[in-house]
Amino acid sequence: MSSAFALSDKSVLVTGATGDLGLACCSALSAQGASIFASGRRESLDTLGHPSWRSDLCEAEGIASLVDAVPELDGVVFAHGVSTLRPVQFLNKDSIGEVMEPNLTASLSTLSLLLKKKRIRAGGAIVFIASIAGLTGTAGNAAYAASKGGIIAATRSLAVELARKKIRVNAICPGWIETGLTDSLNQNLSDESVKAQQAKYPLGAGHPQDVANAASFLLSDASRWITGTALPVDGGYTCQ
Ligand SMILES: NC(=O)c1ccc[n+]([C@@H]2O[C@H](COP(=O)([O-])OP(=O)(O)OC[C@H]3O[C@@H](n4cnc5c(N)ncnc54)[C@H](OP(=O)(O)O)[C@@H]3O)[C@@H](O)[C@H]2O)c1
Image (cartoon, rainbow, N blue to C red; front, side, top):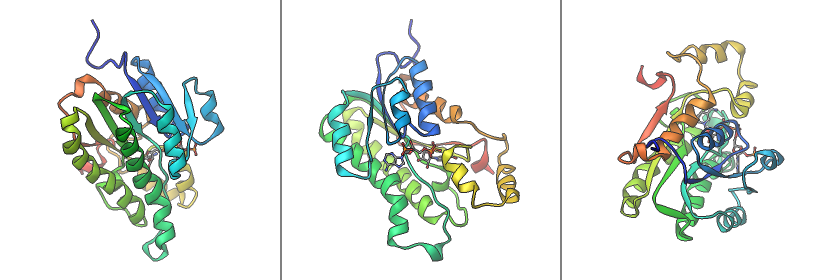
């Protein structure tokens, strides 16, 4: 008998599949039986072993060609995104757009076209990888926090809007997890401030697999009555 947690017979699109969290999602979902369709920009996409498309989701053409190519889906994990730390004095239209475009605009535009082209089946589930930055404050993080807070707010509205189509929408809010994205942030921080940041996690360090396991649950029938949530996967960071 198959478990409600299994993803057998489900087709799932993972964006950001070349990134560390996206890659972990591909492995975890595939281990639960899902057929994975992957999108990213780097060449490493071609070595994942899943049908994949190189698409810049900040470009209308990139979104259109991806949506045209994918089959009907039971789930989407939006695991692409960028991050920068910039004090507010250094923010302007361009630098804000550099974060908002991929993290918020690209995610909503891609979802919009997937729905318009009827690529998501009734009973499907959407998972956005947001961030605890959308729930808590950190100095220098206003633009990134706004992009993730926007995704969390959109998740609630989408959950209400898409319930009549029997499509669930949830966000995962990971804490700090060592990936390509945090490597580039670490380069601008002192060792002391990185260590101080890491010490704030009651359960210690998290791993990409922790996020992937939550995504797997939120895509599965085991979460059939859960929609519109922003689930912290953060080792207890936000409960302090
Ligand atoms: N790591 C953390 O601590 C953490 C915490 C909270 C939330 N998150 C969120 O989790 C998501 C994944 O982060 P990660 O840590 O896995 O980062 P990562 O390893 O740097 O991966 C980022 C991914 O996003 C893709 N991407 C970026 N811009 C894109 C665009 N315009 N079009 C299509 N794909 C694009 C990249 O594709 P290419 O490399 O192929 O260009 C890559 O696959 C991000 O939204 C991030 O904000 C991460």
